[in-house]
Each structure stands twice: as C-alpha cells, then as structure tokens.
Image (cartoon, rainbow, N blue to C red; front, side, top):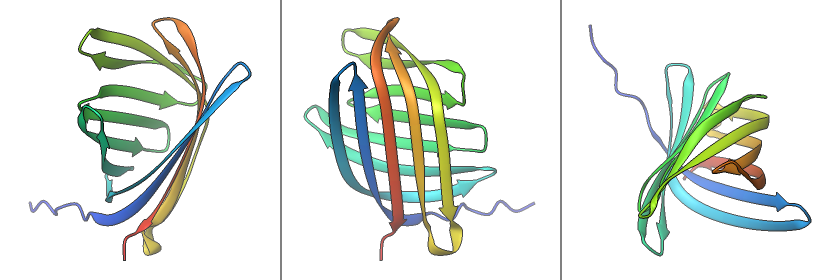
Length: 146
C-alpha cells in the first residue's frame, strides 16, 4: 500500500477579523503567505504570522461539519467550531491557560480546487473564562500564489 503525499499549494491568504462587543467594533486585517491542502474530507490552510513575542504558526481546518483554528509558537490557541454548538477551546499564556467557548452562528466555505482558491466565512460568539468577549466575524480568502 503506497501513501501518496498530500499536495500542498502555495497560497496568498487574506484574513479579516471584525470583533463586536456591545457598541464597540474592531477590525484586524492580515495578509500572509502559506499553504493550502486537502486531506481526507478536510481542507487546511497553514500560515505563519510575525508577532511581537515571536512567530505564530496558524492552521485552519474546515470539514463539512467542523472547523478548527490551531495556533502555536508564541501564542498557543485552540478554537473549535460546529454550527449552533458551544465548544470548549483554550488560550495558553505565560500566566496560565484560559478557557474559551465558541458558539458558531455561521460557517460557510467554498473551494475551487481547479483554481486553488476559496473562502471561509465564520461568525461566532466568544467567551473567555465564562465572560462574553464579543461576536467575531472571520472572513478568510485565499488564492494560489503565482
């Protein structure tokens, strides 16, 4: 039985995060270069981000039912997503591990395999240590880096 390596496509990724907390709204935008690949029934985006404390590696995993954002490096975070479900995640700091809860309101994704491009649209409510941290709208688009 031969194991075929997963084909990874170099991509340009744009991440836009809107955070609403009451009347306050913050927007963050990031452009990164990374890789896109498909493994079993899930699709993955992988990229690195330079932060003040060092490099952060991010993996976004999306399948039909679930989503997951994993960050490692100077930030360690695990955020799981499933429509209309509250799921437990974590955020690790030098001061300890914070419990996070996500309640996913929207999880829409589209992928054009032939063009190696796609988008992920995530809307979720976030609680940190039991307190409401806001409503997060994550819009991720990517396309093959030519």
